[in-house]
Length: 237
Image 1 (cartoon, rainbow, N blue to C red):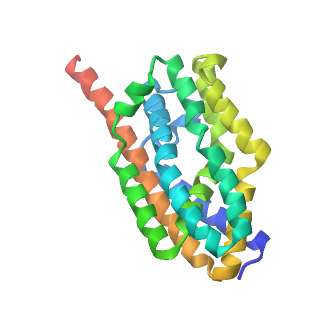
Image 2: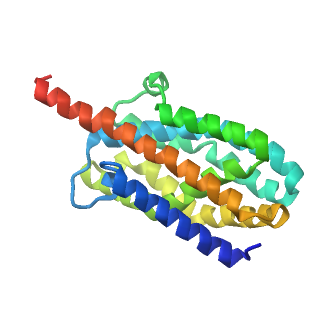
């Protein structure tokens, strides 16, 4: 069993590998943080919409995980419960920004999630039913690790293109993650649970699977926005 520091180092290594793989194999995957290219509006807005979709859909898997975690370790469940209750409202922050672009709640609700998002949610549900809370925790580890490294850059790029009023919600989200150190909380929960389960290999497997779903998502996002936009331009639409 790895100690807390060793676990953090191990997960950091795995996550860096997975993100580098996505950036190397998925077109446009680094666009949101790339300072050398102007922000693609359609790509950015559709990404924000899918972020809202994932927050709302993973709120269900978070709740399923909590039910399991109560039996696995009550103190870990207490931390998880506080964290997920807060995450439940983060869709409102991103929706606030989308309204600046003319989107309504009804418009966002009418947009179907990408197939990769649906597939990931099904995967999380099945894995939680099979092995307990770790799959939901793995997803949050993946997202919080990436948020810690990329979210502020995305907000800065969007603010540069639009204005402060267009990113007030997402900027508040960054501040929340930073001040409350969400990634540290995820690591604390992971270390507590793994101390009882005794095998970080399961967590690593879950992280790698989730990264595949996220890579598929960015591929679908690229195809629906950038590629379709290019085709429309060629067709004179």
